[in-house]
Length: 136
Image (cartoon, rainbow, N blue to C red; front, side, top):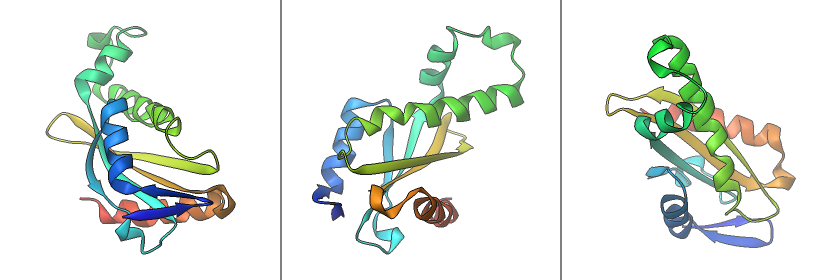
């Protein structure tokens, strides 16, 4: 599916491959059609808990951290890691992400959405809310 982000046209299949080949995220689903818009690129992603643990080991003794606190750290780190994806989106695009679940397959699930910066952060935030109701 081709998405117009300002003056740039992005192929969602190419973006999926770019994300999977250049980041620690795996694309679960292309959610772009679910936005019911032609100017939003959206994906449901996951990242492995072991990957997150390796990163957090540098700052924490993980065995001393309670599970609730660990969950919060996983969610925060996952959302921070989406900065890596920003390197691959068009210059005039904005990206938002929201991690929402520690899944039984030991991954953190999240949704990302990209749009032209002219759309604005608030409108993209509203679209993110709608996308989050579509996942599991």
